[in-house]
Length: 219
Image (cartoon, rainbow, N blue to C red; front, side):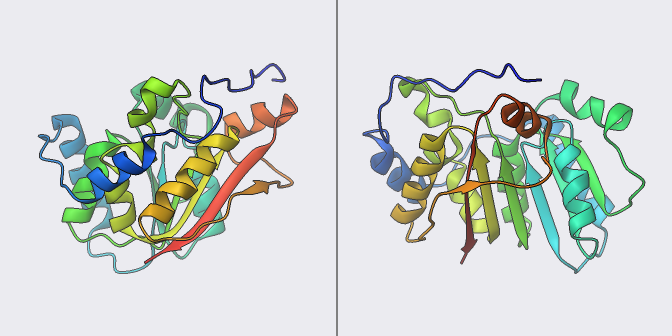
């Protein structure tokens, strides 16, 4: 529980190509074909939502879905969809993290595709949580960070109150810079709470690490 390693990187500050990457992605649109398993997952989500016209929340990179269930309890008036790319992680939800609540759904899908499908289908989020995404700390992997990749534009298009949390402060700093390039002001801050929302958060805190967060209303 208390042995989580601190994120290390060969970057000592925001990536030098971040502005170039963000501007490029904001000015273009992905033409990548959708993966079949994500098309099926999105169809399942649409069927589950039916004719729902109320608040919609996404918990992206939800892992085992513990945070999805917590968010659903915090916002009982909303429908909450948790998405993670790992079938191993989402498969653990029913076995250890599910709660008796009918306002949330946990799915396995590729978020690069799912966000684009959601935007193209007219989804507008009330809230969007990105809790402890893979930091990809090596400088050469900056394009794999959500704010350095093509999907950043889709995150913005889905709108709502965006909450991003990480135990690597540079990730949050870069995300705030990417938002600024897109014309959105967000201020990184330390995050603390009485109870953790995810297994990663629980592990990081048990290891004495801090969480950093930005929360911003997207236009």
